[in-house]
Length: 124
Length: 107
Image (cartoon, helix red, strand yellow):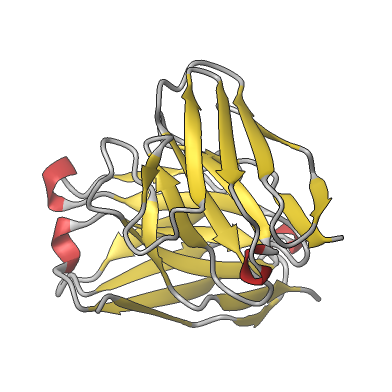
């Protein structure tokens, strides 16, 4: 069974940084695109970005709203994915979900596995 | 970026009703569309991919159709557990984008 578990959420002040982590089990991490989707309180889903699988060279793609401030990476063991949030803004307040691509995805992934989410609150 | 627009934003229906939710893309995305269901306090759940393919273990009450710019999610006979919010996602090009959501409420 595929399981994803996020950690690292919490309260952070505007302009500061925070790192989220996602550990997975039940599948071979390196073979799948892994990503992050966020949801501001009472709002809809927003695609944040993905780290591509080994098939696509482990490159990354980001939404325009976070490009240049957020960084997605995999650790050396390739069993954890991180989301580094730099220079956070109040509008970054959201639940951040870790997601895994479906094996049925073509070039741009859709997601068949989701973590429970971790809440990031940006406030002074 | 490709914009995804869902309609209606909310809909009221009763158990047993047939419901249709629409999703329109700002440009041609072929059949590269997924649908998700999100119940309150839960993570989203994948229902449909490639516009019309049913995800494993998802009820056959759910069906998807469309291609190009116009897509539809249909629930054939509403069950109590179907009252939730539904999102479409385009998977044609990066950055991927979601629709704003359609809330299905009990009448």
